[in-house]
Picture 1: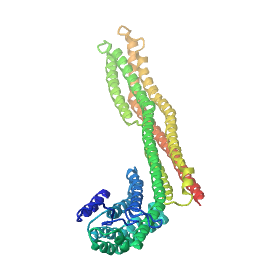
Picture 2: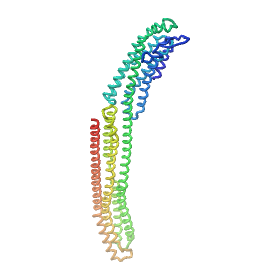
Picture 3: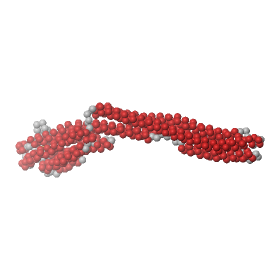
Picture 4: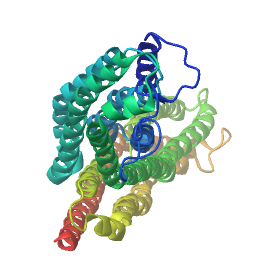
Length: 515
């Protein structure tokens, strides 16, 4: 855009009538030397070409400094810096046509100076009109630059606007003299030019240009410092975002690993223990039923009847117990809820981020001692995030180890179920121990009574005892899971309280440092 304005100014100048001169000494469309315009110097003020070049150099410095603001990584900081960036860009784009136009005009040998100066005046008026918009935009950056910073930039903008406005008065004084010189003829003598040369107006014009240069050069370090502070805070916030995202990812991965270890080391082991009980029962029942089948066709009616009844009962018992054990497997779940952990980590991130932004805006606003306090404390933010992350990880891993021990105890309680079923199966085994189809009728009668008693035991106590033991295991599991949740919650709550204390402590230290 800057270059577009320059080209337009050149185009306006190019449309001016041109006249051939044998030995042109170009100064403001006068083919004769006027010291202080394109060359030479009146007193120590230099000349217009030199001074406009100095102004354009200052504007280029403005632009090169602010270009780095386009590379800000943090979207919030980028948005906050928009007004500051736009004002400086606009200052360059609106000012360049004025000073480039003056430089070009100063080097003209012929042409309509009124047309040239009118083009420059239009650019001056447009720049002055923009000052109100510039002030409004800068006032919108108070959160980033602070009240003092906004006032400083606002004061500079007013100075530059007044300086540009003063150019009009100088041009108004110069123009009539140039026209008068041109009216003398197409080839005025140097004496005729010197007699009409508006020295005081040209001296004033150069003084205005030098004032702009001085204001700009005094402002460049200020702008550079503001931009450097903004970029430094962009790096600071960006670093914290990187640490935050990394820790959040690591925490999620750790929680997944912890739950994986609980699942494999506790839940699956309990499932395996329950299934082992079922497998042992299945093997015992099938073995007993094979022995009972030997007597399904026995001549002794009593043993034949009891063998068939016992086999049917055991088949039913196997089905019932297997179903109960399968249901128990499905209801046995051991896991750790990571909700509180993630909540505390998110609270920590929010608190640290808020504190970081307060420090960052103190630095960009040039709050006294903010720079040194930032240098002293900025890495404490990273440490705080890592500290809370470490305590939360320790909470999860510690509870996982506790659950490993709890799982062993829960697995031990299942041995009662196994013992009960073993006792039940042993009662049948004792009845069939040493009994074969060729045994005496008396022994078969005796063992038939034994089988009847074993069946009575299964009917009366088997289902009830197994159900009671299963219920006791489930109640114990619920209690342990509740205790586990309470232990983990207390640990995570302690991390949360630590976070609050650390954040308060860090902000207090920063406040003391700045005050």
